[in-house]
Length: 136
Length: 242
Image 1 (cartoon, rainbow over the protein chains, first blue to last red):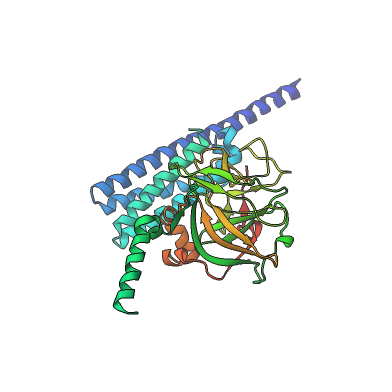
Image 2 (image 1 turned 90 degrees about the horizontal axis):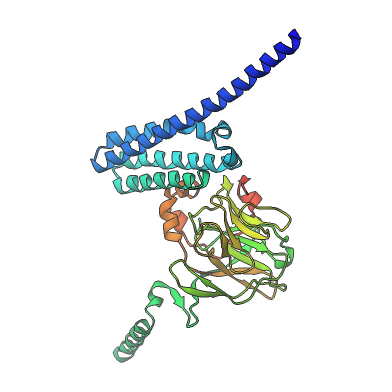
């Protein structure tokens, strides 16, 4: 009886810990998404107020959120019915990195048209992923 | 050429342009509404430079070649059955045009620009989310296989009917590559049919094209003489198909 009780408690603890991990991943994703939104707003504000510093800060903030999306952890974060599409989310993260890297190069070279085009593409990547993953 | 003849040539050219202004852009709109743009005729060759012959093409395998620009990927497929004929298609801006059919003895060989008309997903050396789905495989994009699927947003295109849209978010067919099948069984690309998005593609993927082709000028270069044709599995490290 004692053994059975111990097993029951252990399994409860394990289930709780799996659930907690899943919740942790979800809240991490939500936090990352909020940071991404904040970063995109900052880049846009920088563009509209001609502040390259604001733009660069926004880019750095955005890039800080990409690690999770680029890694295998993404499988734990995506909604259950979209886990199979994790490669698509990873590709989106890759493209976000590519455009944001290019944006810094364009800003440093004074090619603001190209930098703003990069911003447009960043936004397009965000909406493309939301259309796909969140069945928008 | 004397002055009179020169003036005659100028007058004749002006008349042609006045009658058909589309010739200035290089787009030819035939009376039946067909939309076609001719490019240099190039021969499809394998990785070793040997001409591709229709009889050697594996069935239901996606091959990739770049045409008409150095960075615009196209897919070549030998379908399991003859294609439809004289398929009426429509671009997203409403222009009608006719896709004649596949080529080869069985009329089963087709080529399409492998840039999805929805959000321009295309094969890169890293990965490909767009491919032909053989009849034996399943796809989430449509209830039948033997079609082209863009797995980014699950658009489905009819490979045997000018890549017309079967489902998903795409609003116009994939552009077709017009092929010529020569008497010696070789294949040649001669032009593009449909409303292309090449300029949008160059603009949208500038950083990526810089990475893979060195810069916009190199990416936009027109393909000349021959186009290297390899299996998609050799072109892209990873193929993602849902």
